[in-house]
Length: 362
Ligand code: ADP
Ligand code: GN1
Ligand code: MG
Image (cartoon, rainbow, N blue to C red; front, side):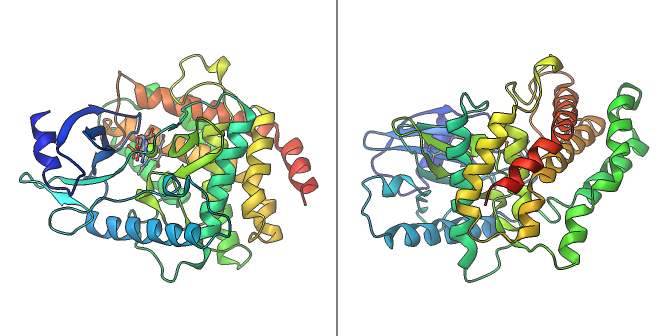
């Protein structure tokens, strides 16, 4: 941890470094829980292979956090938990919201939110409601952001382009893995017609770009241990212009299955309808304030679309030699792709009931 102690000297911390441990299950950045005698922090090394312009990313990050902080300050009721509801960025000794170490690594630091945690698999539907309400409130809070944020990854949720990348990986078959993935590829190709649906609706002027989170995995919201409320939306790397459906779709992907994203027993994977219902009701309790009728109508479909889109990305990475998502075992990305396909099929088989419920919520 020597080097972490050194990195910490780059930030204006309250006290001097005491300890740090690896933290969380994210696939992209390196995250540490770090403490001084006075305060606990999250310290992260930004993955600059993926986020090519970390300065711009942190400009977004600060702008979003400040905007939410202002919204909270303007609330009529004073809440003792206010400072736990947004990410408080610690400035570097150079007065930047990041610190660049001698090896060119970009680091950022913010206050650790105590007495709250993230869940890789939700335990009960009240957590689904709370998490989705928090993401809906996040979109609602950012609806009047005065500027368009930087796109930290271009075409992040452009599903047809994600499919094109998969097709290129298939053609290259860099690692000779193509022969193992025929059933997965067949299913992905059989849904080809659906991949441009949201973009077509946007181009037709039926649904609208907004500022969205774009990575609303359920472990990107902290749930309060005491109240069970969604305390704070985290992982702001991909907050940028997007469609609200990308966020709702990813909630369905990560909040409805009782099994983790990399479950090996596919019999355990599937959409729990009660979790979908809680997500929909929670999300609409806040997003219902700004979504139009067509946007609302497309919410159930977004669950299948985003699940398959991430499945496409896992498969692309598997064929390309696991260069994007962190892996912890052989075939990890293929296992992840398989769960996404199983889940997408489960979502599709429940479309009628999902749509009926959606229509019934005013
Ligand atoms: P990644 O981009 O790698 O997913 P995250 O920003 O989501 O990184 O952080 C990884 C994990 O660290 C989260 O899932 C959460 O458990 C924890 N975490 C992140 N920020 C905070 C915070 N401010 N307070 C408490 N825990 C946090
Ligand atoms: C990554 O950073 P993390 O683990 O929250 C990825 C998401 C994927 C997700 C799949 C920047 O999210 O897009 O949906 O893994 N983030 C990036 O679990 O690519
Ligand atoms: Mg995360």
